Image 1: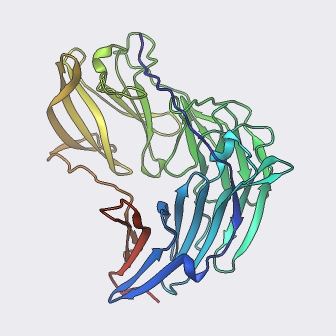
Image 2: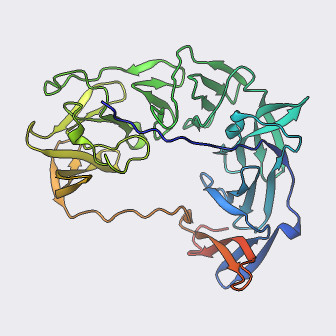
Image 3: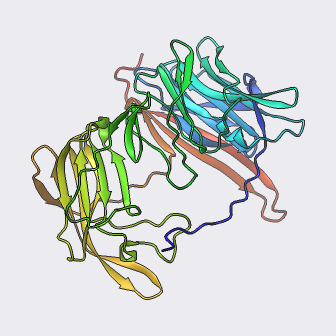
Length: 407
């Protein structure tokens, strides 16, 4: 049964060098407004690829400025002092090519003023990868680990921090997962391999970063915490295709969603799927991370109904979506008879609710401690006659919404 569609992907990767280069006044322009300020990044064609909010009472916000695969910067802005600092990715200009270059990326805040990222440089015509941190206030850079990929290939694997921000994990698509202790500055490779060829069979990370899932649930030392897979008598044969695992908020629970069989009738997008098919599920097991079954939510076998975990409202409350599928010839099936309930995991009680409003997340609007609203947009202007791009600059707008707690 052919359940996956493969699309040939041609990806041209240009090696880049992550080097410190503070911005000059010509890189950006800061303009005060009546209730905040605006920053315009002056480099034409530069866009904000990602935004990183600080923990606690931190005032530095990090922006990943992206021009193309060979030119990216980290841009730090202090909401109170309006100070800005910039760290740049620079092109490796000697023709070096390496498929592990995707390893180079921002990772996140370690503290209110410390940011961790990965970097690359060329030594004797070979790309050397490193893990570094940057103390934004002082401008001090620290090399945490050097030559980290000397025995490991890396391509699109997840890199993540644990809740305490003292461990960094790096997973390669060839199966190696490396555990970096940021305090002791030592590392080890987990004994078990976890192959994850993107975009299939990817490793999923828990909401705290303290666990990961690859069929079973593991801690960051590679110890199996949950391989129970509580048997459901409605599953008559080995279930290999239509199943998914999702960690809940604060890692209180793990939700395993699945079908009772591997029939094609569960596929939601048989005509339009580009990579893996999405599918409708018939049962949800809510477990503790240790594997203990807390709740089993399922539809009656043969009823043509489905149930899916729509969203987490809190660590103990979820929204469930019940529906049916109407087959349409030569088209994707249509979802009909939808209903939604709020489900309390602790009590097992549910309550009907109206259809939730769809979430629109364009990654352009952010709130810093409910004190600042941050809007990210692009100022693009083009001459209508010549089609020449006159302006294409990233704009970051800070608006002060409350003076409470702001020093």
